[in-house]
Image (cartoon, rainbow, N blue to C red; front, side, top):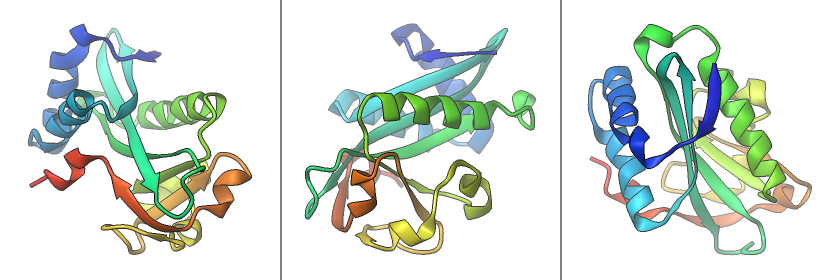
Length: 164
């Protein structure tokens, strides 16, 4: 399996992955809209002879801690034929390494705590943030000591507000 940056020629494959994984196009549309709005900061595709999975990250603005470089992990999908093979975990690990190397301080995700805790995501850190998605499924991961100071209201990329 290889993981690499998304290229423009990958769009149809990414769309197919999300529709197959979720049975709808909302997540694929989210990726496209974040890209079109300039809010997509990292977009990786996993290939295992065929496109197998995708992960995207977008900007997150911390209004009371604007010096903290923060982002949102969403969405993440693996095509059904490739699920249960560690592809999603590989995408998360690879992308977190890239974000850390690029100087990001904080990542926020809305997802299953049991799954994301294996990567170090913690709902307690997310409790210091005020988001439209507050609750037990909102988790955060500090990629630096600076990220541990995240607090207050946040703004997601505009594309999230357009989700149906």
